[in-house]
Amino acid sequence: MITIYFVHSPYHEQTYISFHMASKINQKVKENYDFYSSLLSERKSIFSEVIEINETGNNENTLSKQEVLKHKSIPDKMVLIVDVKYNNHRFFQFKLRYKEYIPQPFFRFDSDGDTHRNRIDGVPLSEQSITTPHFHQYNNDGVEIAFKTDKLINEKECKALEDINLCIAHFFQVSNTRLNNEDYPSVKISSDKLAFSFKDDDPNQNVTFP
Image (tube, rainbow, N blue to C red; front, side, top):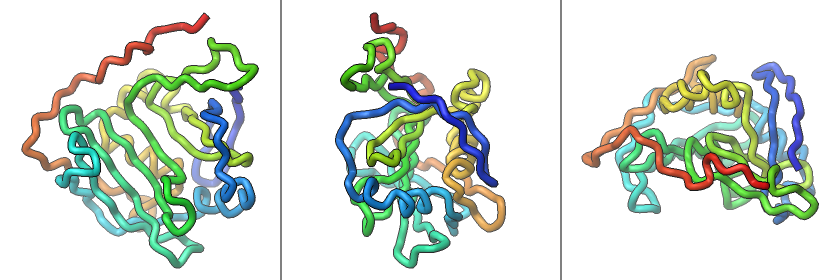
């Protein structure tokens, strides 16, 4: 189902619209949701003022860069992963990963991609789709959800966030990550591949499910 809820914190105040994803449950998150919440809510620090992206990632069509983060309460290494499509620099992902906790990213932002259809029993087809851009996180049942912040709902602000440097600042605000005090790093994309400005076509973009 679609759930609208409010989050108030010292770092951001947003209206979130969340869409339950596949029903697969992450037991580790479900069994200790307080710890998961602390991963997101407590301060995380990055030490690189410029994130230079110039290496091919796991996907040959993607540039990728990892940066080490320091979490306020965790001694182990945490990483920020920035992925950018070779042929479309407006198609990027930000991911927070703590492999000692769970292998997959525990928080993610997708700037582009196909519309998600969330197949959930009892939910009408008309409520099973969500377009990008959006964030991903887990709820207290250990289920991954996608959500939009106020800035992503607002058409003008969402358009501005197609700029990767503006968007990473928004990602850092939502995830409580900073460089030094209240600063954010900049992203520099260095590649010999030509990047086009168009967005990938999404065949479901304007489809209203009956």
